[in-house]
Image 1: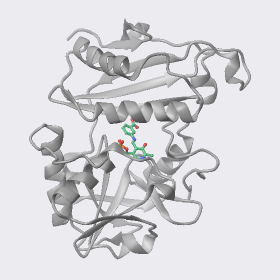
Image 2: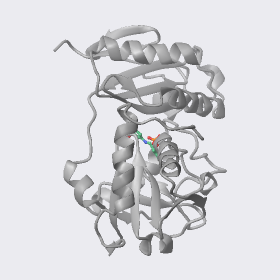
Image 3: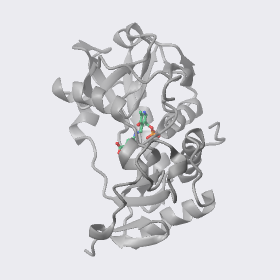
Length: 295
Ligand code: PXG
């Protein structure tokens, strides 16, 4: 296999030559934004939504991406093609660019546009069969008035600190509450519960990332005639749920069967989770169409 090629600012570089400056504010301050995207069988899943979210994140941090959205979408497809990848993980990174030391973004020039493609590392298959067991992290999600969780920024320490708590407890994910003690999301996944045949998930104003998988699963559930309610949730709602599952680009739809040592529902993946997992697979592979995209 030829060596991986990384897109930086319009050119493709061999992996060993794919470098940015140590003066880049993306490195110095986490000043930048990113996206994690997947392709299935050569089709990029919801590329437009990911690119739109990327440009919104950039807008929110006052960063002008030096190319139009259409060109960004083409660059993703071209990088994938150059790497001969069909089942891929795509990482789009926009940094503020190199500058002098000091926070001021005006002292930087040339935001860097980076596209990395790789094979995707997944949760072990047995977790889809038996479900994830997770804990609640003590680290709360960023206060939306400090750094909005809607921004997918290069500053992921909030989530990393919670992730460390999870891994220290032997868990691959961790639940994060918001500053009000409400359920927000996990470190890299959104959360849903099933209660009496309905689906509940924290609303965006809980201070969460508006996941692209979350949106797709809401569409799929409604398409299947299941009511979906976005609302304020606390841990009681999870401890007493019939089923729980997480959604994310890497995880897709994964059952979550235990929180803080308490089994959820039967302690096994439930029927609604299984149904949505199956339908999500059909959707990403292009074997299922949604009548009308609501998101
Ligand atoms: N919440 C947070 C905080 C996330 O970072 C999600 C929810 C799920 O969103 P999507 O749009 O993926 O359904 C995420 C996504 C990585 C990686 O490389 C992280 C994510 C996605 C893909 C890759 O760590 N996080």
